[in-house]
Amino acid sequence: GGVAVGGVAGTLAERAAADPSGPGSAARNPNPLSGAAEASTASDPIEFYGRHQPGVTDRAPAQLRFLTFDLTDAGRRGGALAKVMTRLSGAAAAMMAGHWLPEQGAVTENLAPAGLTITFGFGAGLLRAAGKPVPPALNPLPALPGDALDPARGDGDLAIQVCSGDPQVVSSVARALVVLARGPLRLRWSQNGFLPSAAASRDAGATPRNLMGQLDGTDNPTGSRLEIAVWLPSQGASPGWMADGTYLVTRRIRMLLDSWQEQPTAFKEHVIGRSLSTGAPLSGGDEHTAPEFTARDRSGALAIATNAHVRLAHPANNAGATMLRRGYSFDDGFRADGQPDAGLFFQAFQVDPEQAFTPIQRRLAGSDALRRFIRHEASAVFAIPPGATRGGWVGETLLG
Ligand code: HEM
Image 1 (spheres, rainbow, N blue to C red):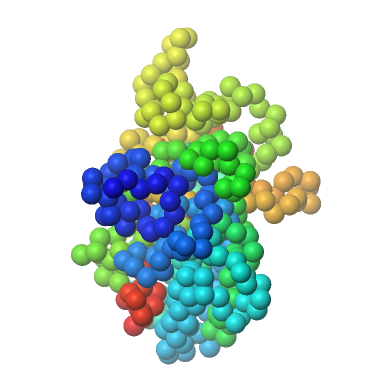
Image 2: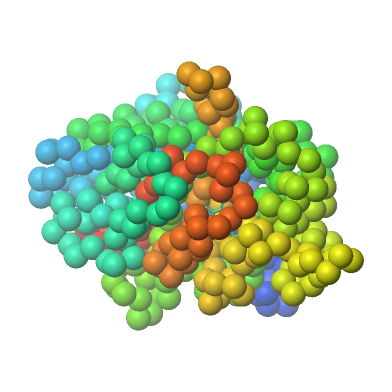
């Protein structure tokens, strides 16, 4: 009953459920970022309908387009929101199955969805427009030290995350969704992202490297820890419409790549607390050995420095706070000052940002050795409602 590590069909939960040896095996329930982006084939599209929305615990394919929208006056009128979510959900289900829409013209003719997922998120503004109470987990994040946020590139009433192994599929799907949303919704901001593609990856099972060159995603939760960290419970969730949903925090984090590049390797390793080449913690072992925060090197100094990123971010040093990081690199060219406009479009899924992202980021912003080399430029929080039942639509539990 083993599940191929490179497989992309089904959520991790479904894969675990289909596995007679049960959930919790790291090998059978790989972290969505461990493994180079795998292009799906025509034969195994990811299912849109289900308990959870797709694109959360599914392995991240190579291409991302993240879209956000504001409601227009027309969108605030009674019933308009339910109508547009019905339309967008139907379109998403069809396109994920590779049934392309007239709105796409001939652009995707003969293309497979390549692991396409389409995920919807609701911002606090959408709930207010719908006359619903805003759950505390969806409150705007507090101002955090070091933030230099551009409001025009943050927040939004509706978010749509489009992921696929193919850049042309992503482009065409995103455009079709923007066209279908017209009237009740107006595009607010969008962000492209990427990971190493399957075509270029010599080791399909390897953790992808970010633009600083680090293996990124190593210590993401897997198995039952992942389920508990990400999904609100099916029963007894508060608010009830979020049962089997999750919350997403996005941060556009620019990397100061020119000054990072100048640093010696040993320094770069101390900034994170892991080896640059293998990703192993500086306390010893291999990439997946748990870091030992009390270990000392030969000189008697802490092997993982007091201000190392993994020490400050690790659940054991944050009262257990855990999230799923599923970010994408971005490269939007160069800024007017000649510096690369590139970095990490950080995305974290969790049961409650107030218990996970926010306290961890507050600590990182205070003393993380990495903070010299990064700038948080935009921020958003979205409620990711449960998946749609067959024939239903995303948001039905709130707006139906
Ligand atoms: C771990 C890089 C921002 C939370 C890591 C690791 C790297 C890394 C290389 C070690 C490998 C791994 O476990 O994935 C970066 C870079 C960032 C960034 C380059 C910004 C450009 C953030 C932010 C947060 C965060 C904003 C949350 C507020 C974490 C957590 C871990 C981690 C929770 C796992 C710690 C552990 O369990 O050992 N990051 N990170 N990171 N990072 Fe970040």
